[in-house]
Amino acid sequence: MNYPSIAKELITHLGGKSNITALAHCATRLRLAVADESLIDENAIDNLEGVKGQFKIAGQYQVIFGSGIVNQVYAEMAKLTGMSEMSTNDVASAGAQKQNILQRAVKGLSDIFVPIIPAIVAGGLLMGIYNLLTAQGLFIDGLSLIDANPGLTDLASMINTFANAPFVYLPILLAFSASKKFGGNPFLGAALGMLMVHPDLLNGWGFGGASVSSTIPVWNILGLEIEKVGYQGSVLPVLVAAFILAKVELGLRKVIPSVLDNLLTPMLAIFITGFLTFTIVGPFTRDIGFLLGDGLNWLYNTAGFIGGALFGVIYAPFVITGMHHSFIAIETQLLADIAITGGTFIFPIAAMSNVSQGAAALAVGVMSKDKKMKGIAIPSGITGLLGITEPAMFGVNLKLRYPFIAAITAAGLSSAFITMFNVKAQALGAAGIPGIISIAPDQIGYYVVGMLIAFVTAFGLTIVLGLREQAKQNVKVTA
Image 1 (tube, rainbow, N blue to C red):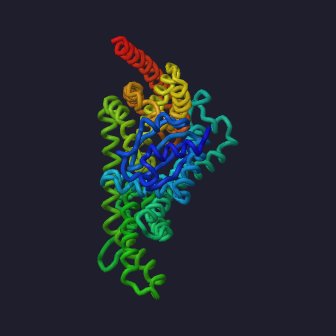
Image 2: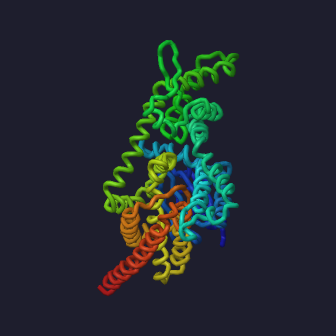
Image 3: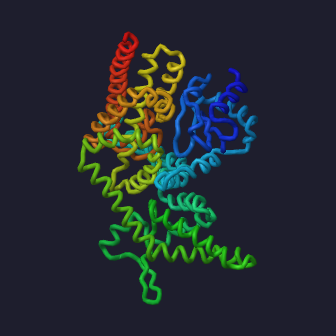
């Protein structure tokens, strides 16, 4: 493969060097920001050697090459454009200038939650392992693994402690990431997060029980009673508090003399924000968070399989717009309140959608006689089954349209099925076949059947629609 030639042609088809404002790459995609998208020759780019697909999202233009190729093409383009020092954040920032308010809000949530996903996933998957060890009758009739093997009891207890840590101290992770995003000092943010889960406070998860028995401890300051309640597992209160902290810090730095800045700014920022958090912001946003979680669960439980089917159908379009990143905040709250919610219903539905997209792409790969399409469809279909759908969706299904229709139909049908059996995840992970470990042990069977429905329906419907499309093309050629 002639990488210098591919890079040179790609720059030409992108409207020339002057039209490229930012350039970077991730594991499989070349990520660009361009000044004028109308100058892009998409058909010519599609026909370039090595190109597996292209799409526009969040103000960015992305070209899929695949791992091992994209870095070679990027290296040659960086030489020709002089943009070798840029990162994906630079591209995202350049692309964000073209986004509307809603897109910027979604990107903001994504920027806050994506860095802490590894911690949440680690805790969630450990929780899944703990559930497998303690589930009654999953492997042995009437007994759990620790019942049958008492020597595993302490191991299960250790795993449970490890699993809970990211959720117990979630405010610290969130406050650090959010403060950084909002332009404040992330370490001050972490200190605010620590303040919100301080052991001197009533544990946030015991707040409901305490309110019934009127045993909530308070600070009595000049007649003002402030509840000493922690925010373990909270999301919305931490985000708002971190935003206030960043703005207070930046405001103080403008008025406090530089000689006193390092002394007074951190102290005043923490005190002012902490006071506002425990008096106004925390109680108000905590109630909103409870209402949001309760409302989503009510909608899920009330709408039943119809609601599940609708969510399954629209999930892939949400991925296209990038708005699916906003679900991370909701899922984190649902998992933090797992004793009440039972877990997150979003993850299993996302998995049904991902498996459907992967199966549709595989069907195209099986049917297609075009070597290039087959080379794109089969690998991207497999990655779709494993939970990564962008290559399948943008490189195959949306391009041909009918596989995408087959996939969202299958996603709706399989999501309706798992909703009837109230399938929920107790952890986050790869939303596809590997997601089995994240599902509540007594619901794994329904999850597997749901994936089979998604795969068979998407694969079969893609074949049927593909044959119909071929018949239409033959009629046009004959005419």
